[in-house]
Length: 255
Image (cartoon, rainbow, N blue to C red; front, side, top):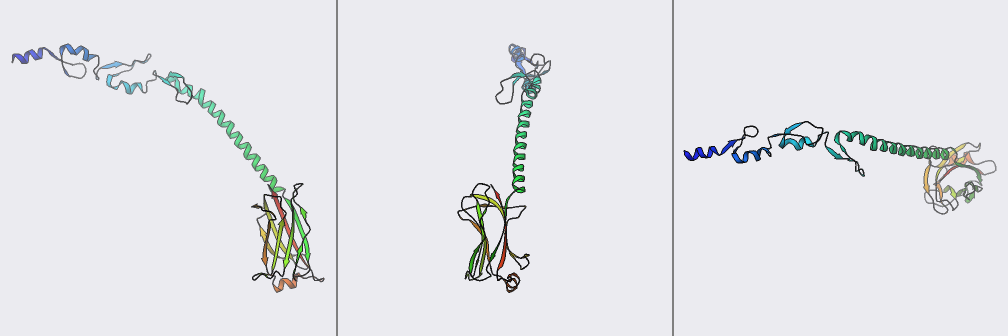
């Protein structure tokens, strides 16, 4: 019993904070580190008090804590309460100006591209070929050669090859472009006319006027189709002198 009283004489309760039983000579030291003790925020200008164990949570949000700017390349060290204003004034406004300039450049390039597309679509290099063949008998009949290049030396002509002896079709009608052009966009129609210069039959079409096809060319590139005229087409197309007429409309969108 005496020993127990002696032990109590040398121990005290931390009655202010955590309630732990400590040796009386350690109580003062415990006061300075007890996680339950309330302590003031160390940042000047902040009067908040927290339990010592929760202070780090407060410091992560304390408006008076000094922090480094989160923007890459900026080493500004400011109070947290001033950081938003700094980022907005120094970085967001600059980024907004750069983005505005970038969008302006994108809009300019888009407008230039659309303008070029409209220019090309509105002013293709066009030719109409009307030429004759001496009937539907064997032979090869070519149109005149036309210049498409506007000084670039791009020329083309049309051809009808009859009586070719093909096992499936007996004729070929086509458009040929001379070497010298790597690629283009094109709309072509190749037709046979009746005795009154009306389109009797459209043999071939490549692309559309509103959506010309893009072509990568090789030397002597040609478009066209094999076909066999029907008996009715022969009767309606042969003229008094025994000839027939053909028409080709060729629009080249040079790129």
